[in-house]
Length: 375
Image (tube, rainbow, N blue to C red; front, side, top):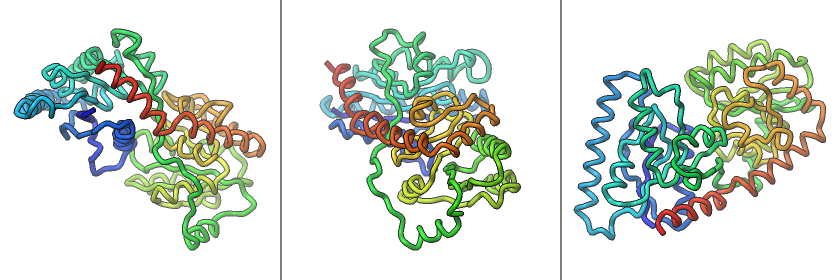
C-alpha cells in the first residue's frame, strides 16, 4: 500500500540527529519491510518548545494551510495515485498533528498514529491549544500505536475502542552480528583502559536538559562507589561537554572520554564493556539500552517512564527508583561484585532484543493493522 508518512515534531530528514528522528526513520523502515511504499507527506514542523501563544497560533494556521495544500495536490492526480493510509509519528501537546486528521478525512483513508502521548495536566495553560489538537487527532485515529506501556495506560481514556490501541514496543533495525573496530582504533581504546578493572559504559549526547541532568545524577552515583575496581567509558559530545567533564573531575583517574563515535564503533564498545549505566532522567524509553542488550551488555538504569519496556528489571538488567542515586550506585555495586549475574543478564538481553525487538517483528505488527484498517 501507499503510505503518506509525517512526523510533526521532527522530520526523519531533519539534519540534527536525535532519538526522535531515529525512531521516525525506523518506523519508515518497518513499513517498507512490510512491503509498503512510504512517501514523506510534508516536512511541516508543528513543534513548539516554549509554549509561546502567538507562535502556537501561527503554527496552527500554517498547519491548516499546509493541510489544504496537500488535499488540493492529491486531488489534482488520479485517485489511484492517492495514499492508501496516512501515518503520523509522534503526536503530543508540543507537536500536534494539524495535517493527518484533515487530509485523511478529506481523502477517505485510514489515519494511524505511532507514539502518541496524552497529558491531561496540559489541558489548561500554555499548551492548551496544542493539547486539544493532539487529543482530537488521537481520538480520530483508526489505530494508535503506543511504544511504552505507560503511554498506553494514559491513552485509554482518549482512544475510542480497545482494538484501536496497539502496543508497538521500541525496536532496532540491523542487529549486530560480530562488529569489530579497526585494529589501531581498538588498540587505542584498550590502551586507555585499566586491564584489572570492570568497565562501565555510558553513551549519550552532551546537551542541556534531561541529558545534562542524567550526567549529573551519574556523577553523584559514582561518588557512592569505592574508588577502586571500576572505570567508566563515556561516549558522546555536545555543547555541555565542559560542564560534564567538570562534574566528573573527582573521578578523572577512573573516566575515559571517547568523544562522539560512529555506530559501528559503538557496537564494539558495547561488547568491550561489562555494564551499561545511565540514570535516564526524562527518557521516553532509551534506544541505547536496546543497542547494549543486542550486544549482550546488561544495564543499570532508572525506573522512569518507558525504560522498563527496554530494560527488564531482574532479567536484562536492574532498575533503581527514580532520582535515587544511592540506590543506583548500590545496583552498580551489586553487578560489579556478581560476574555470573552480569553474564546471565547479558545473555537474556541479547535474546530479548533479537526475539522481541527486531525490525521484522515491528514490520509484521504494523502490516497486520494497516491491512485491518483497509479491509
